[in-house]
Image (cartoon, rainbow, N blue to C red; front, side, top):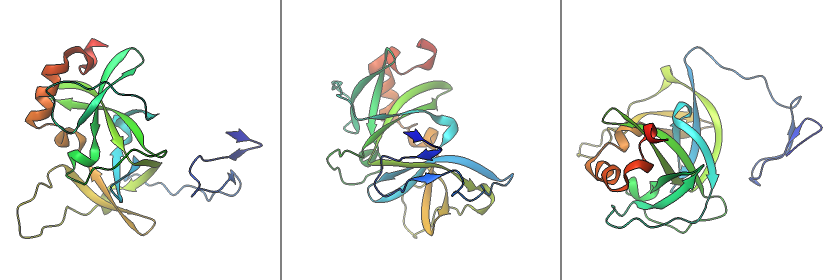
Length: 191
C-alpha cells in the first residue's frame, strides 16, 4: 500500500518508510539483482531474471507418480505449473506452510527447454543487489556433498546468502520425469 510516498510492508519486521528516509542505493557494475527467500532458517538468493512472479499459497492439485518434493500443480494465468517444495528439494526438514510462505514462479532451462515451475519457500524477503566479484565459492568439508547447485555465497546485512543455480538444482532425472509426466504445463513454448 502506498500513501503519501510511504511504503507499507506486509512483513511485521519491516517498518514504514518514506523515500526521503532511504539511503541512496550503492550499486556497482558488478552488482546483480536477486530475490532473497527464507528456506529452513537460511537465506537463499534466486536470480531475479528467472523470477516471473511471487504468489501467496494457493490450493494445489496432487500429481500422481511424481517425486516427493513435488507438492502439486497450481493454475497460473491459465497454465498448469508444478510446485516444488524447496525444503525437500534441498534436503531440509519439511514444515507446515505459514502465512509468510510464498510460491516463487520461476523460469528455468532444462535440456535446452524453458520450463516454468513454482518454488515453495518459507518467506520472500526482498530484491537486493549482490556484488558478483565478492562471492565466495561453496565451502569444502572434506566429504562428498552436492554443492554444484550453489553458484556462490554472498553477504547481506552480516548474514550469509546462498546463491542457487536454479538450472542445475532442477536438472536431475526426477525433474525430467516430472516434465514428461505433466507435459504441456511445464514447457514455456506451450504457453
